[in-house]
Structures are given as structure tokens and as C-alpha cells.
Length: 499
Image 1 (cartoon, rainbow, N blue to C red):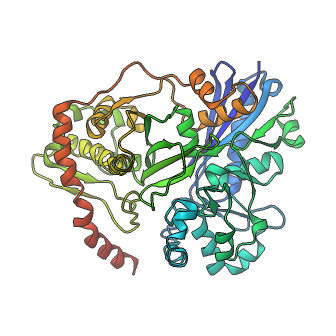
Image 2 (cartoon, one colour; image 1 turned 45 degrees about the horizontal axis):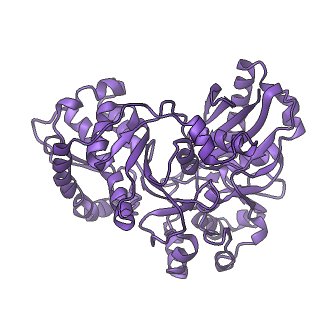
Image 3 (cartoon, rainbow, N blue to C red; image 1 turned 135 degrees about the vertical axis):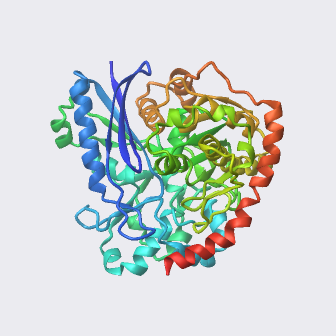
């Protein structure tokens, strides 16, 4: 029979998905772990959290699937991007992992931008942001020199988990592209970047293709979980790249993913320099790339709103009357900048707002305004992408929280002015990790063949309502002004708070 295991290492939890050759999910398990915030702007996790979570997931799956130990043939991973894992001489972390949503590195970002200028875009295809790995490295060098002196290897989170399974130091191109150390065109670590910031090339892991086998599961782990085969471990990919693979993203479709953050992404057949307007990374599929724009607080905005103003309600109840509210929420706008914003403003100091509050506005108006604000923010990235690519995306795949509510799906169709489809069974980046393992094992000859076999879409299509599209165009034009109109006030308030 044979099984593959996809492990998705997220910001708040680790999920394991066990699949067979027919593409059926045989078992799945999830284990949560904490996020440590020792100071304002800090976001850390100890890598031991991930190992403990993985052990729990493996144990639960093995208990529920009688032939797990006999039939497991391969493992692969998806994982949170950009986070820095620094290991010492004893292969143990010398500092907590600094995560993608940590914003302590603003000064380091300025240093990198001033030193590299436009060469940064030419080499890495991305602008420097607090979330990326290189600023974290520079922060350790400048603020924790004794710790930095102990570093012998740096890794990304999912690759540290792969190291635990195999004892091999490695990464792959989709995650390496998010470090600001990869020459994206050459698919190699950039010597220019390494030299510019006094990084020993030996601390960087070996680069692999995502479908490449990096090793076998160690004997002690095989023994612990009664694994009978020599289980192959494949390199895997960054969470957004794996999500794109698992959603069947192709050259004429775009992906709208709404989780804690939100992403608008599209496949790119060749390397491009967007000069920082969009992120640009290597895909898990060899010689392909993807561009993406990010809304930092997408689902996070809705969670915040519910927990703050409607704590006793579930999401279904909170949103069950938004269909009675006209597009534009009767003149109420929301900007989802509650933790700063990424694309296209790249502003860690901007903060969110409700604009146009009136005495007739009720909870349902605020709820719809939050959904519209999140969608408008993602449209910012769509507008940039289509402006630079002649609008070659014909339809969008919606995944995550935004795909669960039919009214929100219609809002997306109207705001993006595209047909929107959903997956029949949505497993997120973990499915992409399973597909990588399956392709690596030779179950499929190509990614296209895996997508054709394992990715199924719902028959229902949400199509734009022409009248709503025209109205949203007017509302969005006003919404776009909100960033510049509130930026100075937000920045001034943040300066007062931070003193």
C-alpha cells in the first residue's frame, strides 16, 4: 500500500497528514505550542517545541493507523518562512528561534538597505524587511556577539525538524529565497551577500531541490515508532509554496489564502525583479517561481474583532447577517493594519482603523467592514501583479478562513472581479508536503500529474456581480487613501507608546 507523511510546521501548531497512493487522508493530527514574546516586538519559539509537537503527532497517528510503521515510506515538510534557527557546536540551539513576525530588526534593515542598494533586488529579488532571516542574523551579530560566536549552523524551522529526523543539515530553494542570502537566478548562496555581512559560508545549509531526498529517518526514531522501512525524507518547501502546490496553482490562476496573515500569489515561469513591490521566491517545482503580496493581519483581524467586540459569538453567528448589509458596509471602512502592514506599504508602524462610523452602524456592519477591509488589502497586491503582468490570471482559488463563508466568497469575487473556486478537501501546506513526498517516491512523474490526481475543486463557482463590482471599485478607490491619511497619526502614536 504505502503511505507518505506531510508535516506542516506553523507558527502556533504542527500538523501531520498521512496519505495513501489514492490521495486519501488516512489520518491527521495537530499539536499546538506557545509563542514567546519576552519584549515588545519580539516573537520567539524554542525549537524543542517543534520536536515535542512532532513526537506527539507521530504517536497519535501511529496509534490510529495499525500499519503505519509497516507502510510509511516517505516524509516531507512545509513550514513557516524566514525564521532563524541558530545551532551551536553540540547541534543544539544557542538562542530561541526568531520568528518571521518578529520586528526587532528595523535598524538592521536600514543597514542592509543602505549597504546593498539596488543590488539587493538584483540578487535576491526582494526588499529587506524585519521578517526576513538576514536582518535577524545581523541583529545577533550586533546585539548578541557572544551568542553569534557560538553559531555553527543556521537553519529554517522545517529544516531543523528534518535535521532531527536525519542528522543532515540542509534547506531547499523556496525557503532559502526568503533569507535574503540566496542568489535567486543562480540558485546558490550569494557570495556577495555573505561577504557583505561577514557570514561564514560554512554555517549555511546545503541546498536541495524540494523533491530531493536528503536522507533516511534515523534508526533511533525508526525504533521508537516501529518504522519497518528505510523511510526517505524529502526536503519539502516553504509554507506558501507548499500551499500553492496543494491548491493546484497554475499559470492562469491566482491564490488567495486567508489565515492569520493573508496572501495573494501567482506562479511565475521565469525570474523577475519587481523591485520590492511584491515578494518573489523560488517555487518548490524546479525552475518555477511565485510572486506574492502579504496582508499581515487577515484572519488575525477577524479574530481580534470577534474576541474584542463579540467574544460570546462563534464565527458563524458573527457573520450570519452580513448578507443584509450593502457592499461597502453602508459607508464603514476598516483597514486591517492592526500589527502593521506588509504589501504594498511595508510599514511596521501603521495601525488599523474604522472610518466612517455612524449611529446606524450595527455589529453586522462592522463585521462586513472587517471582511471587506481584509479583501481590499489583498486586492492591493492583485492590482500590482496585474498591472505588471497584463492581467493573465483568469480565476482565483480561495483557501483558508476566507473560503469557509459563502458571503465572504462573494465579496472576494466582487472585489477581485474574478471567478472564485474552492478546494473539495482543503489540507493547506501539509497537502503540498505530502505531494512532494509522493513525487519524490515516484508515485507521480511530475507535479502536474500529482495535481491532476490529488487536487479536486468544488463544483460551485462564485462569479462577480457586475453591479457590486462597479460599486466596490468606487469604495476601494476611497479605501486606498486611508493609508496615507492615517499614516502620520499612526507613526506619531507609536513614537509616544514606545517611549
